[in-house]
Length: 76
Image (cartoon, rainbow, N blue to C red):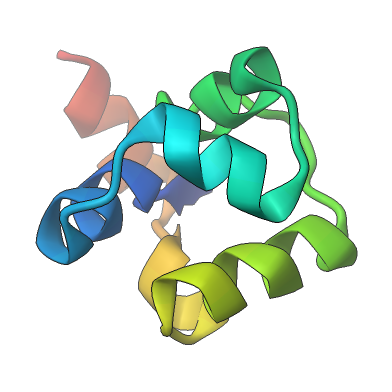
């Protein structure tokens, strides 16, 4: 996948835990975990907006475009 979710990194920088963030943005712990672990196939703008508000960040701090070659290199 050419989009990488960097939620784990920004949560660490902000000192935020999965459980409290899930409650704050009204998302299930399972779905937030899927996002955090870069396993999501899609994300709603409303979820992205809530994450940005809670983490005081911009969407580009959470999502990163990587080229297909870079994605393959990351798997090795």
